[in-house]
Image 1 (spheres, one colour):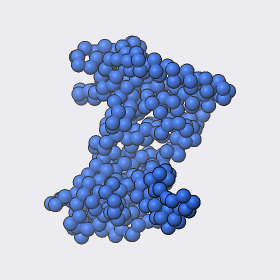
Image 2 (image 1 turned 45 degrees about the vertical axis):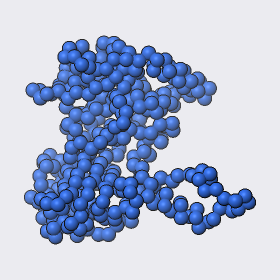
Image 3 (image 1 turned 90 degrees about the vertical axis):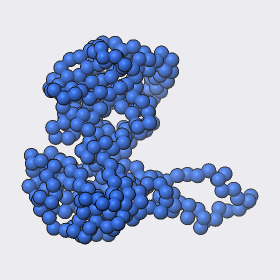
Image 4 (image 1 turned 180 degrees about the vertical axis):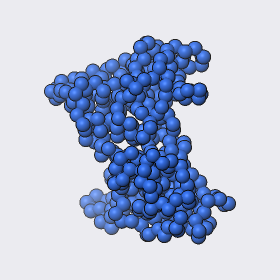
Length: 379
């Protein structure tokens, strides 16, 4: 493969700064004194420049919801995400998986031929049934990874924890533990839901608007099984409502969800001795993707490459050194001057399906550091 010469920072890349409003008590001034323009300008610059970026995909969320935030992917695990990715119940990395319903909707992405529930701490299977094509919830986001949604036909007990087991063939089942809210938690939830219903009535909301308001509340509580049950209650989903559902799956289960580290003695290097790592993904159709990278301690360069075959049928695991991969775009980022990890966000429309590689490399041969990488499809 020919050596890739990466350009300087691409000004066309999309970034989404966060702007904070600070209380005036943090900067007390004498009475009747106008705020110093220079100081305020400097503070604004620092806050915009170095605050964490927000994924652009939040735009799909704000079209429908105003009281909650979209789900975020959990801590990176593998170079291509998990083979089975749990969508609901779901929570961020600091929150336990929980449900309020005694018959929660179970949603996941990935191949499975049997689903089961097991009381935590035991080996007893309480409920089990085969997974069929009829259980597919929506059109797949990642080729070969169907999205299933199943509601168990047994009642779970308040306050109890359960293991959701997803099996395929002779492989060991993937296990996900979740807890059913206890009676006190469910009573609080019922009180708040009554307030939501009262607001819906006062605002005379109906149809999709009423469904969105209920789903918004469940999302704000990170009760994603209930969120999906409400979203799927629409008897006549519009195309954009279906798109919302695919974007929610994409947000939880990225095309790439990984972390990496460069250190002394890193084996894979470019011709000019810079260490790099490749991360592959496949698109089955033209699509916009969002690339989010968080790094520490080193100047980073990222390049997006496409297989010359432009075919998603070929394995995307083929090393970029074995093919004459085409450079689509490249970005260069300087190390942040603050202690917080630097986040870089890029959005790019890919006009052809096929196999792609994201190459992450250091700017200098001796640089070391860690990074996290997410690639998310947008619909």
